[in-house]
Image (tube, one colour):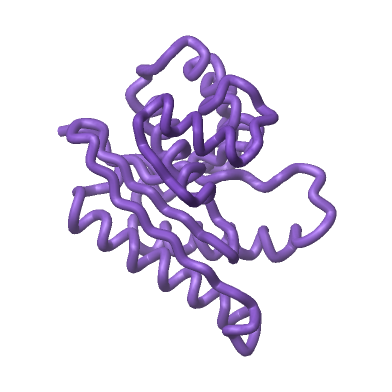
Length: 187
């Protein structure tokens, strides 16, 4: 049975999730926005994120089978604004994964944005348009939304990490993954 890998690019404006079955090549895409003005409090907003992620994960598993590994995009290092909100969002996503999966896949690979760009394009400074183009050129998948392209790249990186198959550049980028308290980080 081929692995099912889930990539999550979390943001409030476009939380993207892409599940990828490497055997069949089938993928399942989801994207949701959680604008602040739609919720009474930040807690309500985080609850909505956690519920939506949980529902999507259940749907993915009912369609593609058990998720073997999850990769999430890490936080932008040195970001000056929104760090606390990003941290809360990441926590809500992780809680949803723990609640629904409750197995090793719920401890996601955390991939720094620069490493994801390097894995996908060959350079760690790629712009959003370059990521969209690289996803098309590398895997033949077209997205109009950069969040979905990032989530798909994360799912492919998770598959490469799990199966230990990929190009030399992909493998070299992913071999820098390090374990921290139950999670694996690519910093």
